[in-house]
Length: 83
Image (cartoon, rainbow, N blue to C red; front, side, top):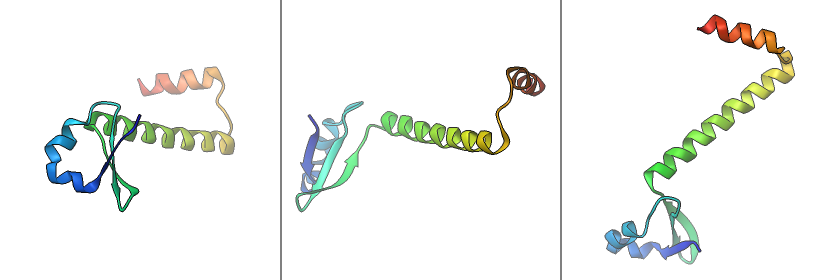
């Protein structure tokens, strides 16, 4: 169940921070509507890394569609040339 608190609870920010654990963000509301999320730093970094990976995979897919796919031999040769 999501941990939802009004933003006014930040007056007691230590309590709010104690409620944050890995995988369980705290959602803050303002005037009854969702406004902010407080995340554990490891969760934040993991999400950023996942977004970066997805962006790179999207670029690779676009490139493959435009330029064609490499054969297994061509991919092996390209990797070996980097080593």
